[in-house]
Image (tube, rainbow, N blue to C red):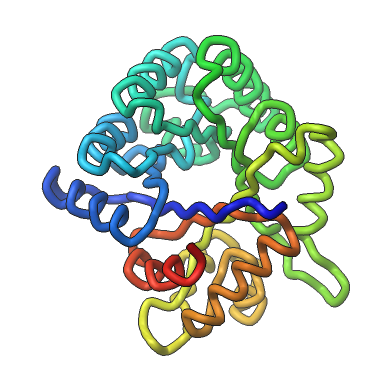
Length: 274
């Protein structure tokens, strides 16, 4: 049986408490289920921002997309996670990542661990959270084998990047990664919620997405290749809704996250899918 759709929107900038809470209530009205905050130096502090959102919009869940787990000792992170879990009355989802921006570690005065060390720390953080805060859902987003194995073992939600290479004829990088997760998760697979984050979609009637974010995150792909990427949506509202139905029917992806700039346009898509 297909899972019901869920929809999230990311918050990357906070101008004021009033504007943040108005945005949360608007997302709630449009049918979004979750508001996410990333974890980057120079951006909003995730836990205070999520607390403000949770208090303003009682039907919304809140989450991190994603915490730079290498910044935190598991016990200290668990203290903040537990507090927000209580203040939001159980509406918090903990998104975890390895951390990847060396300049942020330098700015924080922290050693930048190797890729292997960061993945090991992600695993240790998941184990700690599962033991001490088992009621908090864990989301892990990634593409590499080691990260996806950890996600298959510990996560409730897995964020799929859609692959980092162009899909050649007969090739489906997204299906390959989902197959990898299925094999790694075994009997757990049917319990998992699969997610994709949308980096570009139309915000007007042109049907054409702004590819600026997608170009930065996938610099090796041409614009034509980006338009075929699972994280990029194009076309009319009806066509986008149909494509997302295809994601669910073909891949089992039922949880879709968009950017703050997409919220109004994507609200029309939600109306067709819920």
